[in-house]
Amino acid sequence: MGKCSPLLFTSRGRAGAAARSALVALFMLFGTPSSSADQGVYRLGVLPLQSPNKLAVMFLPLAEALSERLGRPVQFVTAPSFSAFMTRVSEKNYDILYLNPLLCSRALAHGYHVVAKVGGEPFTGILVVRRDSPLKELDPAQLPSRLRIGFPDPGAYAATVMTRRYLSRLGIDVDRRFQVKYFGSQDSALMALYSGLVDMAGTWKPSLRSMPKDVRNDLRVIAETPPEPQMPIAVRNDMLPADADAIVAVLTELGQTPRGQAILGGMALPQGFVAANDREYETVGGE
Image (cartoon, rainbow, N blue to C red; front, side, top):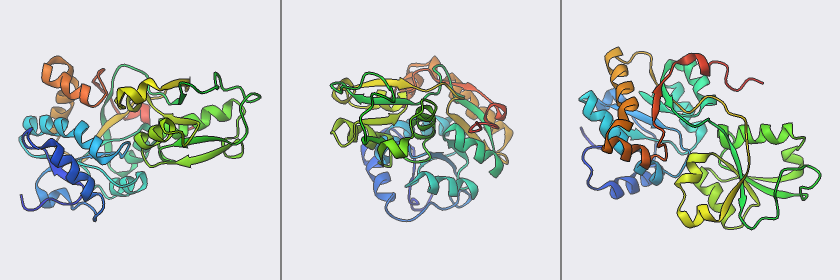
């Protein structure tokens, strides 16, 4: 296979997961990934919702399961930012995508199509405060001035776009009323809240579920947005149809075996995946 390219790692065997995830973090600092054609592999591009270490732990087992079914290596790949990720999507650097609904609607224009989505619970953004916070509800008349609010990234759909829209519909001008800070990932925004760097944070349920128990127990949800289509899985339009079908089969069957359930649990997605198509994502983001 040759040497590994930055920001990708082949999932072959279960040993050394911690070392692999650490290398992913190091790779994020140096360069960009090479094309999958050079590697003879499928590249699973995961939106940088969380730290690279955490994403590696979450997605390497899925990459391994896909590799076994497809009979070819599947590599976990992420990027240092949402914008870098979408640049690589536009260049078709990834074969399989896990991304948010808003960015998926843009990926469709770059030669991808939806094959599956997270099943079960609605896709919503949540606003979280510390458990000892005096805030009980989001009443514009009662909110303190210059409240500090943290978000992962301006392009984080549930955590940022949907929660900001929700606050706007309550009559709260986020940029005028609050001190807005971006922390780069869901984990970082939640840890900033836990550490007292902000008074409120925007996130989504899987990220909150994935935090250490002592962190989760010190936080509480104060508001939840209306739902939108769930997180999708998309593949390149030029992927072999048989391979696309195999990917859907792996995803939708995960909940049927102990190993698959463990993979879903590690991704904080116990509800699993269901088949999906482009239609419900074509108009995401419209008012």
